[in-house]
Amino acid sequence: MSRKITSHDPAAGFFRRLRNTLGPKGMPTDDRGRMRMVLDSMILHIHPAKVDVRTLRFSYTWGLGGLSALLVVMLMSTGVLLEMNYTPSPPQAYLDILNLRTNVWFGELIRNIHHWSANLLVVVSILHLLRVFFTGAYRPPRETNWIIGVVMLLLVLGANFTGYLLPWDQLAFWAITVGTSIVEYVPVVGSWLSNLLLGGPEVSANTLLNFYALHISIIPVSIVMLMSYHFWRVRKDGGLSVPKTTAELAAPEEETTRPERVTTIPHLVRVELIWAVTWIAVMLTVGMLVAAPLEGIANPDISPNPAKAPWYFMGLQELLLHFHPVIAAVLIPVLALGALALLPFYDISLGSVGVYFRSWRGRYLTLIATSLSLFVTPVWVLVDEFALHWTDWLPGWPTWISNGLLPLSLLLLGFYTLQAALRMIFKTNPEERILIGFTYLFVALIVLTIIGIFFRGEGMQLFWPWEIVPAH
Image (cartoon, rainbow, N blue to C red; front, side, top):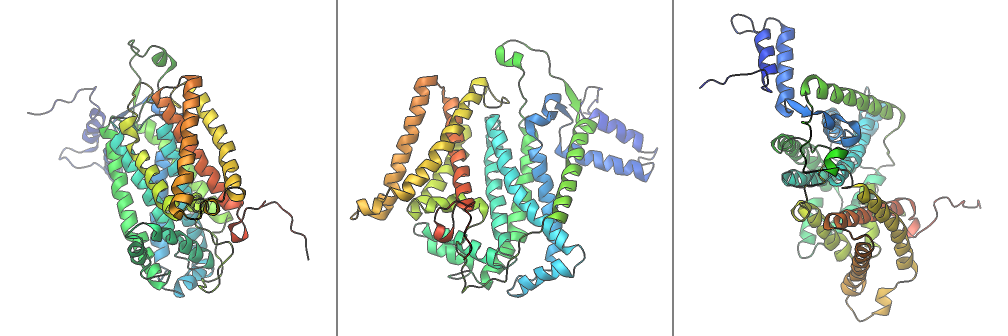
């Protein structure tokens, strides 16, 4: 049976343009018409034919999903150009980077854009995850896409981590040495995983080759495949979550006016195009003005003091200074990622989907949780650094208990007490308690990361970065 196309059919516009483009024998009348037909088809393949006009509000999505996709495309494009002038073997890898900076036309610009786009992608991916969380857009039927998003975030971190080593300079060599040492603390299989990743017992030429293979093939292919499925799931799950109006929040059961929907072409496409062109210009400007870091060639015999992991793993490195490695590097990350992935299955309230911070009251609770975390986290770091000496107090206990499970249990007890106090004072419901808990822990991770980057000096000791060292 043939399908009748009406004026209200979302596909009608496309087929009408197709008929106008094709000649009497079914062939495009000109190259311009053929190109427009192809572009329209591609756009409608990854977008719905119509979108709710409220989802076009910049202050709702902040364009973070589209920016993430744009950065992936920019990284793949610049990465292909870079690998044409790169050999994954020391010391030639370092010499190739120097050659890119001095002899290859626009080589330094391309490397700068690649470097800063990769770092920006980490930030944007995290912000995109936060936007989805704070608007409740991870709830059914979008739970599968939420899990895919968490996996893609891990792949983005993996892509940055593997690419960090490729310049083969001192900064990269020792950052990867510190970062990969965490793998050894995984129980039972830690040593095997470390040797598999490094290609031996330590960072070497084999490590560079392994990281290069992961960086240019396995990880980017996985990201592209998951990103394509992610886009498809957005359409499959009914499009973006829609921000609710004040009337809908005040009377959710009453029938409201039908939401206005507009065609993807040109309304959504125009917004995406402007956003993409703006960010391409921004990254070109940054690439021209800010050079990607490059220190001296890697020297395994000279370790910098302090030796730090890449900035996006500094929160984890800071935890290693306060807990037994098995607790800090394995148990806490596994529990955190597990809770994050399972979030849509124990927070299934659909009434506040599309509403930032769930409600007006949720905004105040988020502010309270943020303020408490900003105060409690640095205080705990100082107390643990200078006052708590678990191994000295409990000398006969295994360190994974005295300096691991015991302090972790006390922190979890304090977190539970805080939740109970807020529940008693504000009469919080389950989704508000999830909001408070997530906000508190995420801000704590941010504080730990900042402390690790800016407030750890020689020997990873705390110091004030603005101290003036007197000249000798």
